[in-house]
Image 1 (cartoon, rainbow, N blue to C red):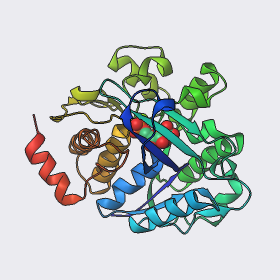
Image 2 (cartoon, protein in one colour):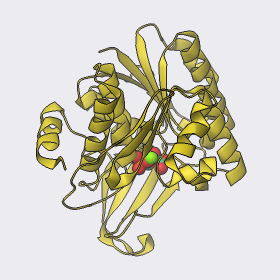
Image 3 (cartoon, protein in one colour):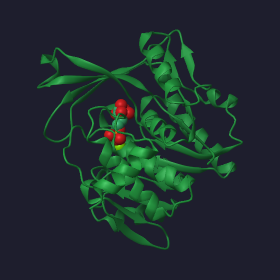
Image 4 (cartoon, rainbow, N blue to C red):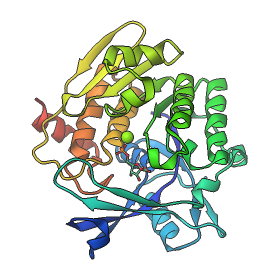
Length: 314
Ligand code: CKP
Ligand code: MG
């Protein structure tokens, strides 16, 4: 099945137990957040070998995250503890309508101090897939350079790279900078996975076909646009189609759906499923994730994935 590498910033997350503005909430549940770490967890639960690269503060948050990842069977040998900078954290509100409010406390975090030098120790020899997102390039210049460096390394070794632009406007200096960096990285990657809300901001286009062509014309090989409950739209230089979504009885929390989707696509491709079947699995995992309050607690093991596909197909 091969080995996967992903890199990012994990955070402790406090999920509000009560609805309403975050400043009025008294009770929170502690959990783990971070787009790339969610993907690592999902892939490991399906039995894949995943190495996760990050820096953690030498503090209780960092230790909690480290233990969480060890328990999930993720390779933590490239994780470094930093005794100068802390582990970041975030708050997430509880809501019945739309997306929850997310507030970060991550400026100057240990992970934002990741630098190109950190890649020197990494063994890329048996790596088949690298998954990246648009969050690390927003966190610091050194992390941005590290992402460019990993893309270059992957290219010289013919490793497939997937990229989820994951727009987080509050982390960028300007929308213009965000757009140009995220698209520049996307053009260098093999698979790009934009979200429905992200499409217009990144490409200026509204139509799925135009958005996909925007990336394909610049070198991306596969574009998969997530379209929420409608499923996903896929375009490659030779074909284009829609893959329908899954039934969701009750939306509990929308965060993490995109990461669940990436888990399905990546694991499917590594297991030699057709692209269509891999996207179908992505839709299933994304749908399951939003039925849970945390960002990764809905990521299934193999048995739960099979069960979900059987019971929730439309
Ligand atoms: O796009 P998604 O809802 O799948 O991403 C969720 C993650 O890393 C979440 O866990 C959060 O901590 C973050 O994205 C972020 O930095 O916003
Ligand atoms: Mg996303």
